[in-house]
Image 1 (cartoon, rainbow, N blue to C red):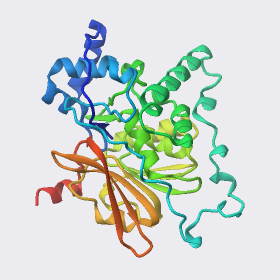
Image 2: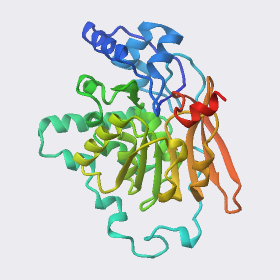
Image 3: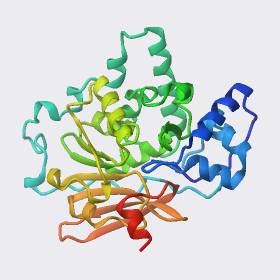
Image 4: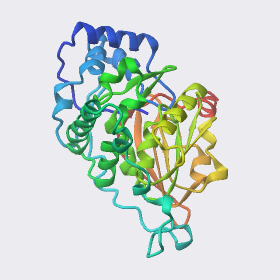
Length: 346
């Protein structure tokens, strides 16, 4: 996953404890397949102080962001409105619609209400501690997501519901709701909350949709998609991460709605397609053709694309088979590995 490139940060000095905590995270690595190239880019572009400051405390602009602003890892560029002009997904052909549309009674398991929300699954564990996490989620959504350009009530509800701290290693858990990617081990990260929300909104996921995610990482993005009522098929190239994500998702009650697979996401998951939405969380130089082939008519593919310069794009398959394409804004993700990396070097 990754982070958006936006306006400059206002720096302030983190505490010694925070500096030490982030130094340990930085030493373990934080660039990943499927995640933002946060530590590498921040350190390269603006030096260690910016890296420590972003990871340890966020910034003043993160705490009260202007609408349309996005956080940078060091390079400041204007951030266009991420989702203003894409509009709702057009209705798919009748044969491709999920049950529950146009008066057809929904399947019992196709409704987002059939899956207990993240906060409901947390209740009863630690009482006041759970309430404190919930308060942080509410603040995250209000100041980092809704204050920018994510307006979908369903996406905002999902971001309020999923316990992000359960997807973050214990040593970084106090930063789980900060406006930044965080390391999750194996040289990989969990994405900035804002970029998760933007990509989810752009995908326009509906209850009962089959959704493909390329790059499971911590499992957080998959959980957000499941909160929307989707059936999620997620692929991770790093086996230990895939296994850990699967355990976390099972513990939180998402196991029946999220299917995890170890493999190279370049090739998708053809036996489970077509998919109403595809989310790619690492940057290929070009969209892998198998992913477009597995996209349903009317479906959307959301991905970062590029090498040194990357942009978040949305591709939509038209009824006549043509592919519409929109560029959203600049982003920073690590390159997609596996087959995409091999083709990049050909």
